[in-house]
Image 1: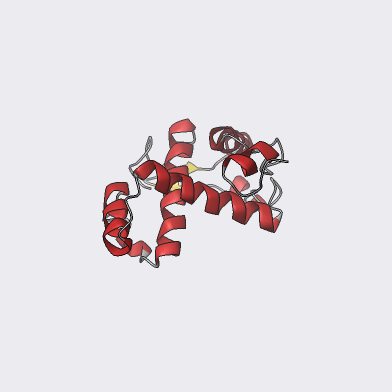
Image 2: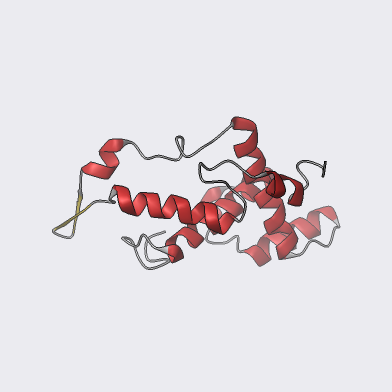
Length: 145
């Protein structure tokens, strides 16, 4: 992600959105058995065109994004993933990395902001990172009860 979404050291919303986009494309790469080394080649439009050519369907990019979100949320739901698993190892938040003569570290506050912003932008996780019932219904993982 170097150079993307505010640059290498960004920790704001733009970076969180870029991570979400990569996460969604990776969910499809894994499902379609695409090599992640081709990530610069597989834009959303290319993924759509390839999948439609192979399957004969007529998916839109929005439908593919929703399918990717479903994969991500289902994975999180089935594994019981919460904010505890979304934590970086403590060493990563304490020990700086030197780059171009300067030292950098992602602080606990920056990491916490990014994780909570991720939950907010995903539009359907509770404060501890579990998918909410309405999210599971919206993504057709659970039926309305």
